[in-house]
Each structure stands twice: as C-alpha cells, then as structure tokens.
Amino acid sequence: MSQTPSQFDGSDQEVVDLSNQIYNTLTGVDAPKIGIPATVLTQFEGLLKPTNDTWAIAKNKTTSTRVQRTAYKNNLILLVTFLRTFVQQWLYNNGAATSDIIQSTGLRLHSTTRTSHAGAPKESPVAGVLPLTGHGLKAIVRNEEGKLAKPVGVGVIRARYFIGIGAPANPGEFPMFKDFTKSPFNLFLPADNAGQIITIAFCYVSTTGAVEGNYCVVIITKVP
Image (tube, rainbow, N blue to C red; front, top):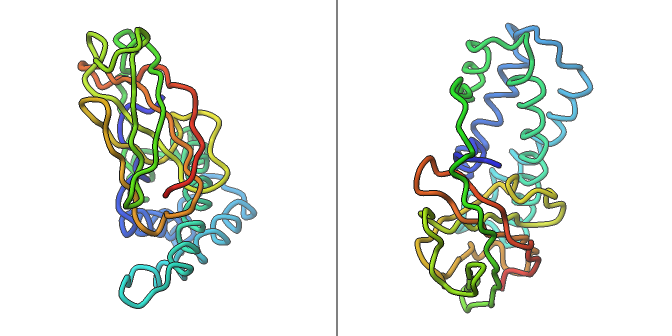
C-alpha cells in the first residue's frame, strides 16, 4: 500500500505540468532511449492531448461550465490511471532508465531504503458514510470493538477515494486521500464532483512511519 502521497496527488496544474514534462522528455529531439514502444507513447499522447485541451478551458472557473469541468476531470482520471502503470513499468522498473533520466521527467526517485511494514495497524476499521449539504460526506469510522476511538499506535484515519468510474480494485491505489485525527469527520469534495460516483475506503495509519493498515470494506456512493 502507498505510504507517501503520490506524485499524481498534487493540484490540477501540478499534475498536468508533470504529465507534460514526462511526455516531452520522452519524445523530444534528445529523448532518452529506454525502449518504450511507439504504440505506448501514442497511447500516452492520446490521453494527454484531451486533458490539456479540456484543462485550458476548465482552469478558468469564471468562464467554464460544469460540463466542461467534468469533461476535464474524466480525462484527467484516464491519464493518471495510465501514468501510474506507465512510470512503474518504463521508468522505475526499467533498467535502462537511469536516475538522471527519471529526474529529468520531473519524477522523484524512489527511496533506496525499504520501509518496514511491521508497524502497520492490525485492526481493520468499520465505516459508513452519510451525505452532507455542500457536496460532502460524513464518515463514521469505528474500531473492531465498535468504538469511535482509534486503536493504540494509530495516528490518523485515512480516507482514500476515487472519483468517477473504473476505480482500482486495491484502495491503496486510489489517487486521492485525506487524513483525520478523530471520528466522525466530514469529507468535502469540489462542487465539480457533484453527482459523480465516489469509491472510498478507510484505514488506520500508524504513528511511526505513517504505515497504512488494512482497509475497510469499500463504499461506493455518489457525491451529493
């Protein structure tokens, strides 16, 4: 499970800029030769272009419509889903991709120090959500004893979520998350997400090393 925020969890502008830097570095005149098939780069371009086009419109909140902003969000989800697999296969797990090449794309290097999962919380929370006015969800997370208190050794309750269709099977791969110190708590989403499907799961995170424990049963609902 992910232990640090993904490089694709930043602001919309940051994610768009990073995506373009990766593509431009790998397809430019002096592009590194690391064995990426042309068909894969074509697929990359086919997802990047509509994201760029719709972001150019959606980033202006005063002139763009909800439909235009939703179109951008949907394009971004498809692009980021592709990139999560792409960067692992063709950069991080590719022997031809040196540290200099990886950094030239704007990506961070993976730590060479392995993080122990020994401190991962053992309890799996039990959770439910209720709709809130203002595009939010009220989350009620209980421990295995049915109490709201966090188990010993737990620092925060993490809500990982995915907006739209096609959520990964593993909640640890959901691109967005927020941490809360106590239950119940309110999770508010942007107005642009209203009416969209949200897939959400909760886990406990350790006080040492910020290691995620097991997730609760995944909840699928709509953003109010």
